[in-house]
Length: 128
Length: 166
Image (cartoon, rainbow over all chains, first blue to last red; front, side, top):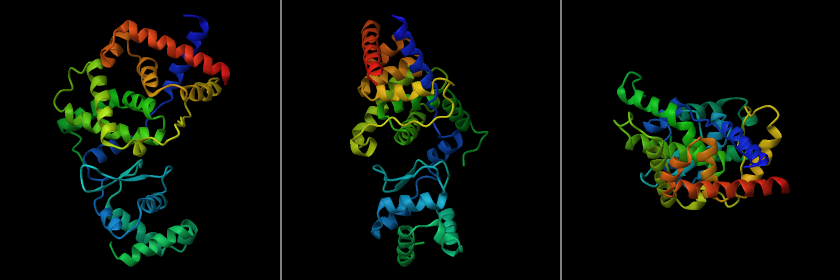
């Protein structure tokens, strides 16, 4: 093996060291115990015709996450899974956040028009 | 939430400390997108925790990686490809800990890795990101160590060409 190859190997090893997951033990446990990240009541929104993308945006705003969470259908269970979020969220917490966002004077600054529309849709469906 | 003094918590804590980051690197090599890698690693690790209940004492690297690989392949089969990986592969890992002076290299490496196949990146992850021996990789891949050595040598050559072209 020549020096150039050795240099590439060294670069690969150094790059590998930078690959660190964001998921902590605690956040993993929250998912593993299925007490936080799998939120079955979201099915109500789907039945009401609210798209997954809108739910994802809603959670992004409400939870102030760095990354947009993915809201996915679970194949094995008739549930909706919220992924890519390090925040353990429960239905009650979402209710609180939603209520706060709707009542806060600054809510219009936090939520863009599309989000306000979605929130109004949620309110109309009266699912909470 | 799980009781921190429970044997189950201790078991998962040990598994997490030893295997979570290596598994993440392995998955990342396949999917090449940070958010997908986080998501799939969680799912695969969850299944591994279930499989390994009560058996944490004697997990050899070859045993773990074979199980991880099979679980990942099974996950691929169950999900449609479009759910896991977007059509365009993008290596976009954010990091602040890259060794000083190698930041430029990071971008070059990311770009070069885009030109490898998933299988080739898997070998890179096992050999260089997780420091496995040729013998252990051979067991995981069900090939001979010599075959792995030759393939990796070709992959390095391929990367060398890519890095010259960038």
